[in-house]
Structures are given as structure tokens and as C-alpha cells.
Length: 450
Image 1: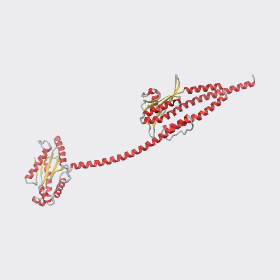
Image 2 (image 1 turned 30 degrees about the vertical axis):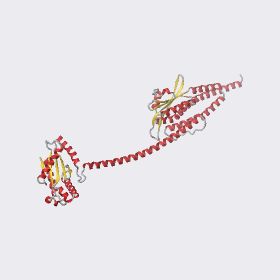
Image 3 (image 1 turned 45 degrees about the horizontal axis):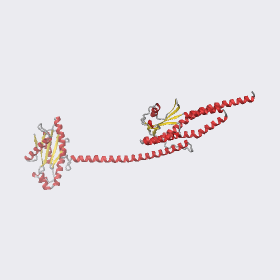
Image 4 (image 1 turned 120 degrees about the vertical axis):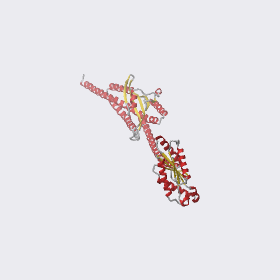
């Protein structure tokens, strides 16, 4: 064999060895590249499906979710690697599937269960009897700025790797058969073409989808061209723009509703304060005599009922005094009702000043007053009443010289709780009887009904 043939053989062998080594290396690289491509493609498909699926789940529009899955199922002709796609809700129930028989079931597979609980997307390559396949997932989460996201569900997809494996085998066979530099150059050109036309656009689309998934509503791919990935990128940009506009609109609505709610709450608080104040005034008016400022007859009956029951239950004393202005009708007839009202105010003022702080003064009606003495027996109440009567007799009143005796006086009847009394009314009757006895004995005196 000539040297040329040997050199040629050696050269061919070296070239063949170089081609085999480079081909093997390129085959390994292409295998990894195709797996990354398939993974990126799955991420792009899930990201593209995430926007309409997220909107449908968040607004509980399952019919829109069905339309989205049907549209995706029609597009499977252009994405033959995707064997099936499923949408799970937050509880792990299948609410959308390219296989209609799966609707409504609970996801029980290990990958589906882990994907439903994982905050991030998962990728798993499985070896089965029918060949290799890739399982991918993407959580459906809404986020606004730095606030915690809301998990609405999960998208799952299975991508068959049969086509990728066949392409790898074909490339290996081609590299082995050709063993020429042309195959190496072709492979290199193919690699750069794939890098430029598919991998870079997919990486850009994946980056934009990841940013959008993390809450950056301004994320866009900016892809141009007529290829599938470019069209998918433009569709993604359109959906992201619509989502951004919708989110800003919702934020404005929330701000407006928050302002309206705060204004409404302010008005409600103001109204509640006014209502509380009005109720307090009404309550005060309901228990107070408007002329004298003393408690009225209604309040006396309610309070007497309480202290009467307390005295009966605890064996504590209680007393009641009934007071009447002597010859008040004659004063009214002589000086008029306005002057009579002034007399009643002065009597009420003296009662309030001269009784103890624990005693309860009331205007019973007309010129008649009542004083309730809690925790006081009849004799002690008689002393307080007699002291009050003397102070009223000593106090100068306007025009009192026209009264009989030239002095305006009062008569008082006092009664205490006895074992024979059955209810508060009888105590009032006994005090009133003592008052009439005081009037019958010549007025301007205090009588105790024992």
C-alpha cells in the first residue's frame, strides 16, 4: 500500500474519528438541547395557558376554562409533543382536561399531588414501556407587587419524547453514515439555526413568562417574525397587556371603593354618635320632670319597684315620703301659673339641696313631691323629712305673705317598709295616707305612718 493511500486512509480515519467524536459530542449536546427545548416549550405552553386559566379560576368561570382547554386541544396538531393537559383547582380536583372523561376527578398520581402542593413548577422525565415522557407543572398564582400570592390551582401537562428520541437516533445514524465534514458543517449550521430560531425565542418567552408569574405585569417577549414561537410570543404579549390593564382597573376600583367605604364608615360613626346622644337625651327626658329637673313619677315607680324587691330579699329597710305644697291652688289663683311654676322650682331646689346624696327626689304630680329613702328606716326618714320641712318654712318665697299665715309651707307624710306590705303601691298609699293626716291636722307638719 502506497504512502498516499496510507496517508489518505489515515486522514480519512482521523477525519472519520474526528467526525465520530464531534458527532457523538454534538449528539449528546443535541440530546440535552432537545430536552431543554422540550422543557422550555412545555413552560411556554403552560405559561400561555396560565393567563386564561387563572382568570377563569379566579372568577369561577368554568365555561371559559372549558373553552380554553378546547382551543388548546385543537392546537395539539401544531404541538404534537403535548399528549395531554389538565387543570386542577386549589383542592386538587380536575376542572379541565383534554380528555373529557377525567373531568371532576381528584388527582391521585404522585406527580400531580406534589405539583398541587409545590409553590414552584415541577419537571420530571419518566421512562415507560412506550418510551420516555416529560411531566411538567405550573402553579396558578396571582400576585400584586410584593403581597403574598393567591393559589388558584395548577396546570399539568405530559409531553411525549418519542419524536425527540427518534430525532436523536436519526442524527446519530446520519453522523455515523456520512462521516464527512459536510455532515459536521450541516450539524453545526443546524445547531446555530435552532439556537437562533427556537432556543433564543423560547428562552425569551420563558423569561417573560417567569417574570409575569412573579408579578411583573410589564413583562413582554418582544418577539417578531412569522414562526410558531414568534406568534406564541405575540399572543403572550397581548394577554399580558390585557392582564396588566385589567389589574390596574381593579386596583383603581379597589381604591375608589375603599374611599367610598371610609366615607360611609365615617358617616355611620357620626350617625351612631348622634343617635347615642339622642337616645341619652330621650332617656333623660323619659325619667326627668321638665319643670323642676327632679325625677318624674314613672322613674319613681320603676326605682321603688327595684328597691322594694331588694329590701324584701335582703331584709334591708326602705322608706318613702310624700310632700305637698300647702294652699298651692290659692297661690296659683292669686299670682298666676307662671309664678306657681317658679314656686315649684324653688321647692325642688330646696329638696335637692337638703336631702342626702343617697336619697331619690321626684315630682309626683302637680304640687306633690316624693322622696325615696333606700337603706333607711321610717324614723330616720322622718327626721330627714322634718328637717326639710323646716328649711322650706324658713326659706323666703316670692309673694308668700299672701298665703294663709303669711308663710309658704309644706305637709309631709312618711311611711316605711312593714312586714304586712305586699307591693310598692301599698307603700305609696301608706305615705300618701300620712300626708293627708298631716293636712287634716292643720298642715305645715310631718306625720309618720307606723
